[in-house]
Length: 340
Image (cartoon, rainbow, N blue to C red; front, top):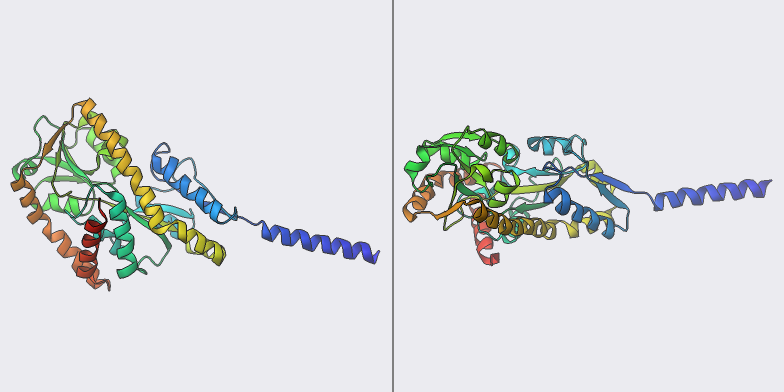
């Protein structure tokens, strides 16, 4: 009888240990884009698969069929544990973070999104590694630059043209610049652009890359695109995880996940925008969207009109304990060095 009880106890212990060894942490990974968007279909699934591989199945993830929070609420949803992992557009949390917005200053973007992404991650590590402290930051990345688009038969190629229009602008630097020069501005998240543009509320838009114009189905309402010699603007995103969930994961697995996140994830995510822009521009040609090179005088005037954005960012960064000028100069330098 004793042997039987002892055997049963031993079997129970072994079963319990096996359960611990095979225990899994499953991450709820939110995607606020439409389910068919490549972030939901490729970028985040690739990261989830790599996480599973490097942790030997101990950490897995699942993407819900529909976003559990609106775009501005991604950070809040992770903080509250509603979702474990999410992507936050940094332009919508300007009151919460400053550092990642360095990449969103005017006229410092390039078409090499992976280079910008690597430069931003390096800048973060050097100048503001601890700023986003309510969650654990896994990665940052920057997408291909935004362009200026006209919804009328007249392309936009002067400051006078801009002032005469009512324009949809992405929140942040672009919206602030358009307001300063006197344009009528309607601002909102990119995912809401179609609603505003398709209804004819505005007759121009700025803040969307060619890919976004296609993905948000704005091509039918767009007649021309004005391209600047120096790309006018780009946007940055954060990949974040709930702190408690992160701490549930073993130290070894956290290190493994860190190694496949950071700059590796950033470049992978950014490359999707580069590839998508190429196909989007082909669709522009098919749709008859005219591409106009910005008049140098127009570009110079916009440079001057938007200079206050970088000045304000540097001042705000300094207030936040970041070396604003140092971070700005370092990011710009690294983008040039890394860009192809």
